[in-house]
Image 1 (spheres, rainbow, N blue to C red):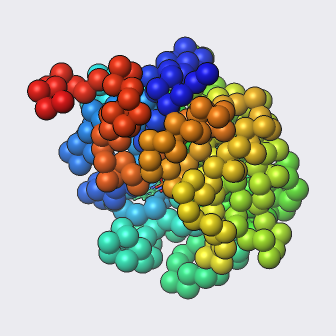
Image 2: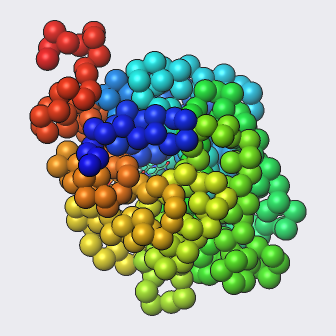
Length: 360
Ligand code: FNR
């Protein structure tokens, strides 16, 4: 029987325990997408804290793929150079360095949240935000959104492929495709935001094509021994209209395994301001992970409202998910995994760094 401290070998990569630091934007670049000392300290300290996988925030595959001007990017060799010491430090602590590859789509070109997440215009520091269907995004008046041509969609696959190649050069061992939270790939999946009539819009097959192609492209350049993850929103939380549902996600999860995805990271929502979140209590998205778990050959990660060691341990112990993905609790406690080992009486499983042992 597995528990939170059981290691997990995916292909030839062994993750020392079942805790993953969820990707969390830090809005801490200086407008150029380059990682800074903040990213080094932020991600580095969570590796010191013992998490099995430390994943970067959404890292844009192109400049127009950022949410804000201060997001991380990986579209040039300079980005590789800035990220490489971070990946090396994470690995040096015994954690697995992971990167989330992302395109913000129509949610991009905004100021950071602490500046109001307001639109930044293309004639300033912003850009025209690409979208599957610009007309489906009417609720942000000041925003310049453009419908992507078919050629641009094909180019997106190549941007993800090139970003994965660079991520590998930077030393990451897990690549995650971000297809959740209303960003570009999710916008293609959902009939709410995808009204295209080319081969990337229409029925389930057509709407999921870009996510399948992107996953396949990343898999193609990612070494056979290293894992590829895909983060999805299990549902749009829009029960009042035709939208992306948990059934759709379960079906897609099977297809993603066929494209070489090793783990489906199951989140939810983020597409539309009308979303109705049914119950944002502890583990509020875990039932979606369980549903997906029964529908795919891939492993499954659960995220959302996992804040205690007991909760995380229970998920793995009862086979509800393979990975406990912890976001905000890691902002409160970078040493979540070390503290979990103490609380669950498993100090044998994960050790404080040697530099800190006089305090233990
Ligand atoms: C996030 N989240 C997020 N998700 C993602 O896929 N990529 C990202 O870059 C971000 N950025 C981000 C920033 C901040 C500050 C927060 C709080 C959240 C969502 C996050 O990874 C996670 O899915 C949710 O926070 C739910 O999990 P928790 O926080 O309840 O454990």
